[in-house]
Image (cartoon, rainbow, N blue to C red; front, side, top):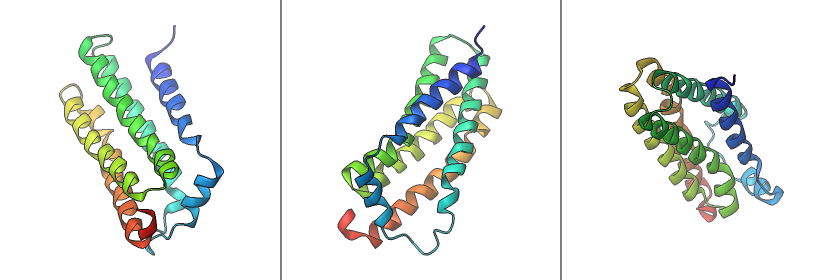
Length: 157
């Protein structure tokens, strides 16, 4: 029998693969951008997001296991999926459009969605809501970083 964590983890992994759909010229654009001096943790960002996605998937498993298969649970799973799609779209969409403003908007959207999801999930499981805290705490940092980069790269807004 396939376990819920396998399905949720598998879906999260497949969606995350979409982040790799970036043209080399788009990566070059992003790499040439000026960064704030205080951005000393950039190399850790992929690891940070990996931990955040694992926590979110674990949260989704807890929510699914509380009331598997109900309409409300499916709607919550849809919100988890929407949050991941928004998050994963940040890099490829921002780089394709070559717009830090678009990246800031996507980051802000993810931050808002994460809070909404946590409030909805809190009604089902406090531990599941707490597992969304890394996203809630990190997303504004990433969004602020992109916003700060806009001011350092005015031609790429």
